[in-house]
Length: 505
Image 1 (cartoon, rainbow, N blue to C red):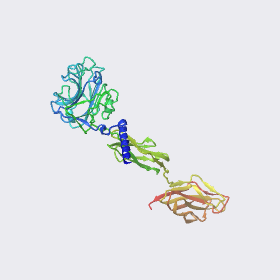
Image 2 (cartoon, rainbow, N blue to C red):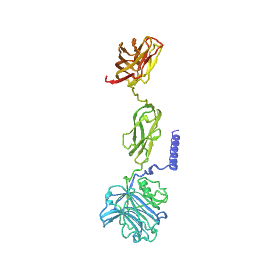
Image 3 (cartoon, one colour):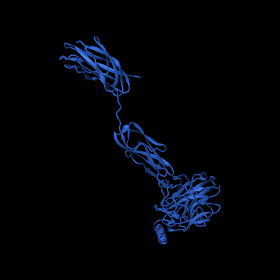
Image 4 (cartoon, rainbow, N blue to C red):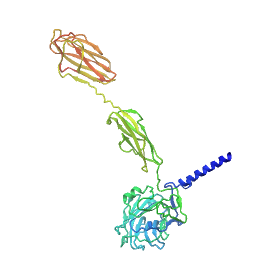
């Protein structure tokens, strides 16, 4: 029984291994994206080369790109980045850091030649001292447009075209074609094998097109797939024995033992950032101005966080932690809304947070009414039930103490000319209101009704003065009626007024 079990187990493991080999990859041969670069030592004569091929026999438009990290640039010495030609200096094109005796500095240079003799060339020097980049990764690129033939090559540093110096003997081409030397292409050395590179090289690309400034600036720090149009050779140097990442098979041979360094020119970041909205919280009710906040992490670095309200970008991207932005919820209608955030890392990878649902509920701010004046005469007949005078109603804010004063102008022409008054309302904790006229005076508490106040046919004033304490927003109202019911009117006249003044508790 044990023998059978072991045999079945061994068969299963062998089957799994076969499936892995057939359908997947060898886990011991996985090449991580842009984790290495080529290390070339000048004194050891280390470089790479590849024999000629139809894809490398470029006679028209051309572009060459590379990342380089020079470890030394000795005065008087020229260092080749890449070139195509023969050992007897029969050159097609050259890309190099050239020592210029005229200005005593190292300049990035690119040449194309129509006959391989160095006599009929298009030549450009970048007017930059490359010695400033010793020990630093720098992207270099050069292009040439064959449609004009006599055009000057263009040179780029870190994605930007730089001003060029054109030597007096350059641009002597008679045709619009680069010579086809049927010769190898060299990386890190010259065709006559005398100008070795000293330092690191990474991500070398050769194109049979003239790359535009926009194409160079947008792709120089991005690892390509190798299938891009016009890309005829692409060496990533990811500890891959000089493998060409295009389908053209221009695999390099290593000469004198160049090595690989785990110091790549740039990091290919395929990991997405992580972002979480931390405020508001789910199902929260918000009002007024709130602060939207989010947290974000990334395996390399977070470049910024863009907040979204109801699916639309809100404000500018916040490029520094802690990530936050103020939201005035009064700019939103009351009801359901959403907040989310999008994080962007330094490789322009983006990821979105979960959507947070929240509710806006803004109550219009209370505006107290502290002064009122009666605009028209008002009569009441045949009633002794006090009723609110809507013209003489104050609006008071809660949690305050007010001084109240005013004058009620009243008159009556009936047989028993009189009136009674009441002060009360909502949101009032206590009220102490005094009143006086020529014949009556008294003190009223909240919602208490006065005894009879005698009137005459001539309008007279009932003076009001007191204090009110509130515990909530509400109204302070004058209520009045006839004290003795009569078919002849009792009137409160225009010009009557009440006012309130807030005082400290």
